[in-house]
Image 1 (cartoon, rainbow, N blue to C red):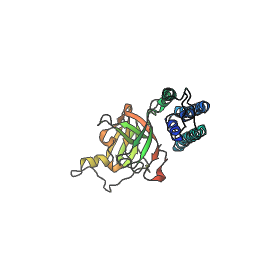
Image 2: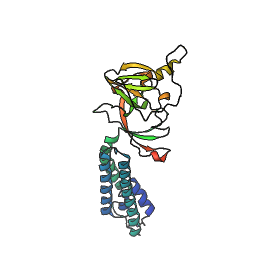
Image 3: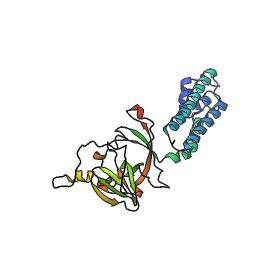
Image 4: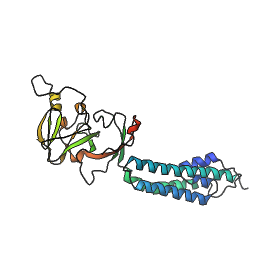
Length: 279
């Protein structure tokens, strides 16, 4: 005896959330299911194959397009399930048949995801880069940035900590191999010229100079004799200059430790900062 079963919009939407088109297939619309599946997966694969958006506005545009597609597919699935009414089950209305598009989505989608697997999201946990980056900010980093090039001056980079294996830190590059870097009374000099650094802040009004009573760390913070950045390394400083633990204390960073550069700030407790480019 043929079994009949009314189609439920909630079930159609749930299936559509698992894989686009499953809701239409459940409602007995295989043609619409194929269109929904191919269109949604095709759009997602295309977006992912481009890699991480290079700007916040591009990220928003991609997310809006993908979300709009998902909503349209789910609304259509719910509508088709209502139209179906009492429904005579077909050969494809079986759970094991529903697994097929799930497997296809994984097989098609995973290769497209691979180009962005090295893209990372970081939550800022320290104040060493204030005011550029605040505690709690979320940033997007391109972890493939240095595959074919090295860091550049003033670039915000992610690098492997020399003190804590496995730990990743974020800081600003101020000098490259062969540059002569010096600090005089908190002022940074590069190749003999004092630099303008509008992003730097000094919270400690004191400036330490060498002397018998001066704290060693304070002197190293505020004064540094001219030194040449060794070949194959780069020199980094935090923007919160008085409270940053950087190359003044740990020395230049090997190029091999450079993991990626920051692209943009995608979330912050200060909404006006959301979407700010970090280059």
